Length: 345
Image 1: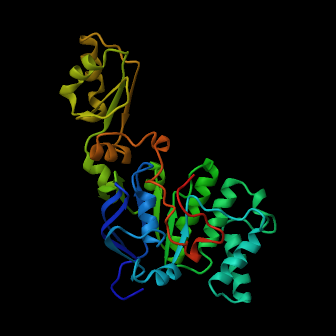
Image 2 (image 1 turned 90 degrees about the horizontal axis):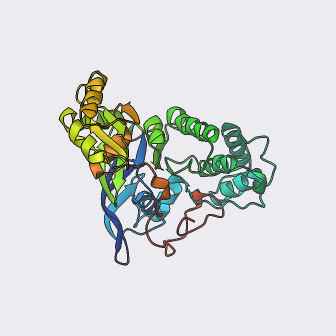
Image 3 (image 1 turned 90 degrees about the vertical axis):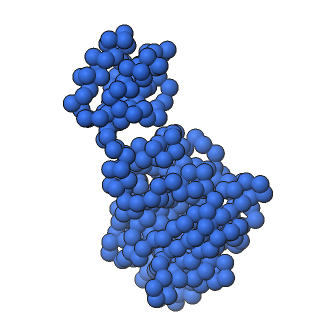
């Protein structure tokens, strides 16, 4: 990495697909040795941004440098410096874990002895030593994700990109992968950019996050700072159908309204839990009997709602990022053997 350069820096990054702008002026500055979370719903522009930073897509505007190299003018150098585990990685199911790691090492010009040593270390690190001789077709989803992570680390990259690495994993596999990311960052000093639509994942792993929506960054900072800036705890009251307006009027004196799903009235409750009894009395005076009440301390979902006016919950049901990316450049070798190109399934 060039002296004085950040591992990842982007200014005014834009990507258009015909008349659709998927990424609209993104600025990023990721510090050496940090885990940076890129949080947002599907379709927000997370994966499109990562594809530009990893040279899979050419920006329509703006500039970006990764590991000190320009992603357009010095794409080859970027590819040698990074590791990438994409959400849509396609690993040859007929090859074994051992074979894929040897192939990946060969693609990076690593000698046979070093490749064998490095492969064994990585298989042990991701807990796949016993399954290394089996064909990938026999692997579970969690095992494939861990193998994909190992493939992205063969050449000991300066910067690691993880694009929604735990999507579709069971809770146990998800926690295991979180542990691996923490180890890479803490013990090896690897700089990590992690995209996710999971609030807990961003909160657990990232020292700083950027929340992206509609191709633009709407909040950025440390999770604790972002949550503190939202202010008071959120009181959510489930009310009978048709009584939302009456309940909202009764609760308005206790705090500002916040976004909520149908059948629920939410406010930022000034004074916290001590005021809940007062809210119940106010609702009783207007003839509204709550079906349930929940008081939540500020969360990243509250931060997202404060920035966009809606909740991040249900993001998995939204459409995938951008139009077809089929025109993408050939994937970098650091992505692992046999990667797919183009749009996520």
